Image (cartoon, rainbow over the protein chains, first blue to last red):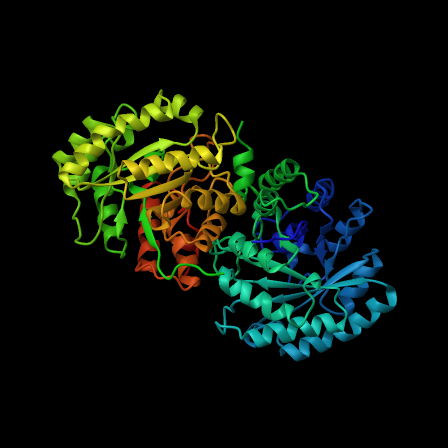
Length: 299
Length: 299
């Protein structure tokens, strides 16, 4: 099976990861985490979220964190932005790339954002216009692409429609997220294939949660389908709000180990990344969620 | 990608798993574990080991366990046997299927068994002869098929040679084991393909450890290559003696979840298997090593 010669990892630990951890991480530690990640060779690091602190108290220090990190040339530091207010707060501290989001599931969108999919997409229109005018890059997330905690099955057509809408609105990349981690390889492959028929593959990324341990095999199936951008979180940080105690994001270390083993270039220093994961796990007072992180820690 | 319509899981938790756990499990609990596993729809359960208690004290109660379990019609209960003495002890309690083993790595064989590969294969000849005469089925294990803790790389030719030798000696099935869990999908696929050129695919099984989190993606690659027998251990029990604190066998629950998601029949009741895994983890005083086990435990 052929897989791409190179893959870009989008490290989402500082945002998607820490947002779903029970333990609060100090602002200085968040800054150190991002700076350590910047030194590993990663080219995309989602730094924080400018969603209202009312909804995401874990990342209430977004402006402070973003101001304090050392931004490396050649590394992108997208931040999550829900609306124009978030956009303004982000721009005030010099953000040059943002991420917007919508669910493929109507039930999920209504429950979490209190809006239909079309309404929530429409809310991003003014943000997209300002980003275009300001030369700000925009990444898009589609969540619940392989299942929804409220409605169960999510029709493929809905996934395709939302991914295409985000791309047409101006997102340079659309990340397809299995938010609750229920997917398996054939389904992941079929979903990606359906989306890629409408949005060019180079503009697509995959984002798997490891709730049922399926993330790496889903990523493998998607690599064979041609995707070359993968979201993951160092130390597997984050949890699943819909299954307490269950695993969160797939661990970056485990993804990079697989990619390197497949002969795929990532530009990442794996031992340094694993070290960073163990450092973060210590800050969180628990074991690293990365099996590679554990195995490489042995003398 | 095509995958087989049905897969047989060989549950190795009671042997390969418990043998590598630090916590000693009571004999009555081992019996209950096997009886619970028998109720899940599994058709092969490796029950224990008749290796000398000097080497494997965790399974010193092999005869007692085997005598006490309730053997279901249609379910096989192989036991590990290292030599004629082990064979005799096993037969004395009514064992009808055994498993023999050799490493593909010369260095591993010399270090662990104090014999060359050829010498250790030769030692099995009298066991094989007696098994044939007694109508006892024999399964073969090849270990270190994708890497060795002593010699590093293991030449593919050595893997093929040992697998073929075990098959020619009379093993009805040869299980290819990535003992230290270092393999990745392309390498796993290439290894299986090389062996399958000499031993018919229906006589092959794969056995992955999850030390680096790669087990499921390796299994996926091997399923696509045509293998239809997979070894795994409930709750992911077992550890890696070469990387303390690291993961052991791939968790049966996670494998079965993937197989069912791929539309592959296993005959196994997954919720019941996951329940059994959580029950075992409690006996071991730790969390289940199965992500599916954790996720399904949620209310």
